[in-house]
Length: 145
Image (tube, rainbow, N blue to C red; front, side, top):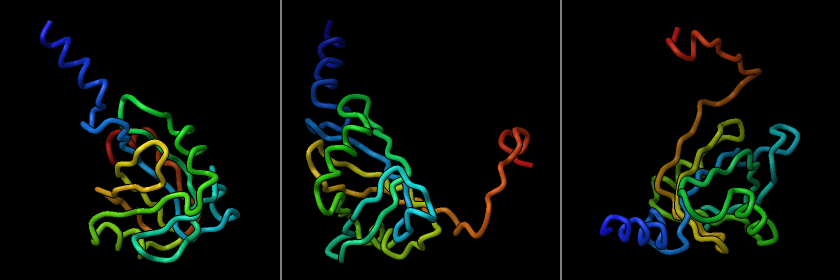
């Protein structure tokens, strides 16, 4: 019975511990054009206190088990300008700021439904894409060669 109460409380406040808080992974290209990327949405973002920049959103994933879906978050920030404001550690913001238009960004952070602010806690950048990317075979995916 005690574990059931703890589980119910965890669900009510969300896995992150703050009501309404959602962990998201935002994927896309900073400074790329619609023609280059064919994104889900073209957004305007602000990194820290910087100027507005184009962001080609290719995917948004909610990493928390409760709360809004990715499509709900996208539709909620679509009419707001800038669509996302990234804040957090200067090193993470610098990784976003210095990415090239041909580098895929995966930005993981926390937001709240109804807010355009994202507290960034991790940034991954791919190597710059310079041409058509080969599709690895199943053997290469599983065995690495």
